[in-house]
Image 1: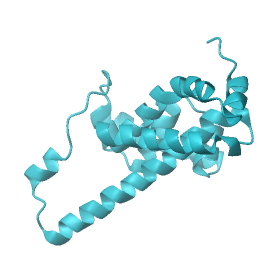
Image 2 (image 1 turned 90 degrees about the vertical axis):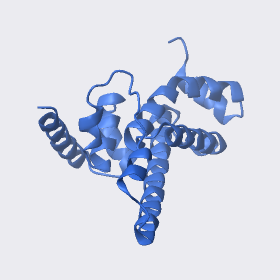
Image 3 (image 1 turned 135 degrees about the vertical axis):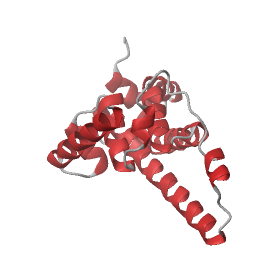
Length: 175
């Protein structure tokens, strides 16, 4: 890669916008994949990633450990994803209250998404939001259970057991 990650974080903390742009280029794809797999909407995934990067840029000086940059920015992303899901829930509740949501509108709100050749998307979408988040962080982005535990504020053993159950569910959906 050629980029000294820790040095780039330190430069970004000192106000070097170019250093932050270099860091962004290293994590953008992972952030977008995580957001897309968890929100199932390309536009919302892009918005959440943009909001995450903006918040990270504004608060990078608060990052205590430069080595923790990736975990830190993914934690910001997971909070944004959870907030977006709450938004979805509120919207769905309003729709139900108005009794105007019919099957055709519901189908229009779930566009078909190109996951870059990932054939498990349908099975993945059947998992709970927490299961999708755990698997997207571990399988898609390669984070270890200890890192995921830190990001989500959970015990690493809990993460491992929940992720294992989610993988088993996904396997059953695919069979």
